[in-house]
Amino acid sequence: MSFIKTDDLHEGGIIRDAGNTADYVTGDWRTFVPKFIEENCIQCMFCWIYCPDNAIEIDTSGDKPIMKGIILDHCKGCGICAHECPPAKKGKSALVMVREEK
Amino acid sequence: MEQKLVALSGNEAVAYAFKQAKPHVAAVFPITPQTEMMHKYAEFVANGESTTEMILVESEHSAMSAAVGSAAAGARTFTATSSAGFALMWEVVYIAASLRLPICMGLVNRALSGNINIHCDHSDSMGGRDAGWIHLFSENAQESYDNAVMAWRIAEHMDVRLPVMVNYDGFIISHTADALHMLPDDAAYDFIGKFKPNYTLLDPENPITVGPLDLTDYYFEHKSSQLAAYDKVPGVIQAVSEEFAAMTGRHYGFCEEYKMDDADMVMIMLGSSAGTAKDVIDEYREKGVKVGMLKMRTFRPFPHAYIAEKLAGRKAVCVLDRSASFGGQGGPVFMEVRSAMYGQQIPIHGYIYGLGGRDFDLKQVATVIEDLQKVAAGGAINDINLLGIRS
Image (tube, each protein chain N blue to C red):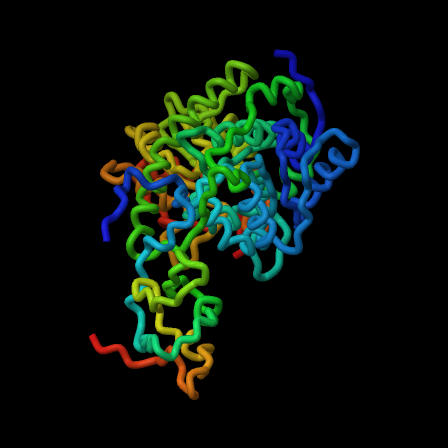
């Protein structure tokens, strides 16, 4: 990650380019990580709704939004997505939490 | 310029000064002995003399929070408090300075608990000495008024952008009717000028984030920028004070130098007690004792280079603190002055006096001058002494 030069920081530590959270990488706090099992996904978007960060990657280019996976730069491994993911495909969910192995 | 001579309490005088700046917002919560100031201000608003939006909050923590929100939104903002009220503001006092918000505050100096006490000492202000505010001290109602007028100019200067507290002694100044010269409203507002915020939360075209999470990667850099800001403050205080003097004939700087030209012995203090000390200094001067005083107006930023220069070559120096630093080496002003004098071989000792409003009388000043003479002649004295305490 590159740093803003100290002389270029804004007075009082304010951020003038608001909405820059996506640039601030925080995804190294996890113990568990959601694993996306695409064939079980019914595109309900619950994971996207419930994610407290912006860690669900959605393709919005088509008529309907399509769940593409997890943005690991921002996922803290809280597990809410996996908890909310409905076991809609013969009792199987599209998101399950697994211990992250580095 | 023609100035009206009026008789007002210190609280009323400061309320007038704040009104003359036409602030957009005041964050208000009562505490003795400050209450009367906001009481007076509420009267201005009720009478239609001021259009300030008064936010009545439920605590001082909220008062300072409201002030921070208001100033971040781009409004000229002030508040006022005393003692425990200032202590309750604590967390947000730091935030106001860190966010570089030019809030003005009247701090009507009162002792901190316990035991509970409503009278004057400087422990409230001194507790906030490291929070990043500019601290101005006043000797009487006139100086409280003048500091409250100049506070806006200093706080809002583009090189400063820091909050300023105008300190004046609880009851001794705040509740005592005193004669002072007041600027006409137009002249005061022309001097203070229109507030130009550096940033504002109320600009949807240019959204900003204020007070974000700031961790190991940037916090230190932000603090380094904040630290650098204080180097620019002394120059601004000087320039604003000179402009004020040209308009009013009343001169201010970092300190008032009282009979300092040929003084062998110097006492340093701040607040209303300086008036008492001047009388006794005059008596001793008549007897040929070369004693003078530096009455500090600016405690933060501390004018260390100025103090070192003014004390160079003196025979004895003492500092009177109206607050204690428990477990520290003397009071806060003593520590600062002694540090500023590092490398100078001049004896310096300190006093703690007037805690909880204990009267500071002529006899105590005489004791100080007698001690100074003893030290100047090569005698010894304790580093720190209590003044006016029953044995």
